[in-house]
Length: 151
Image (cartoon, rainbow, N blue to C red; front, side):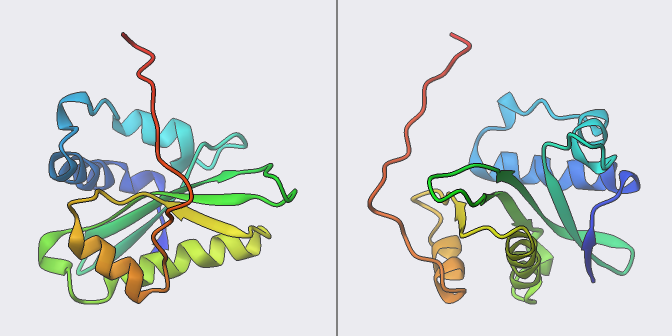
């Protein structure tokens, strides 16, 4: 079952987020807490910074998706950014990721967004195949750049 994440999901959701951080190699920088998840989105405050969905089966969270909205873009329509989509190892291959992705699409369409954007590690070939099957296209017109602001 896919549903919007609730305050009571903060602990299990945080556990899945830590698994993703380990998989992607940024776990030493991971600083999110349950309180952060509640204050910044799960509490459904007016100024929420993200929306999250969870996949639940047998009372256990199997995966999640986190997205946020960029409200103003070049065409005066919002863009949805899929920040994270993760499915735990034993739940992979059961269409959980597809269902989570579908919820993000519905969210974007309901808000009049024209684009959904996300990033994939260059070495994560399974994710690239997954998104390709769902109609995603590898964007080559832009390069992803960053500047660390805490140096």
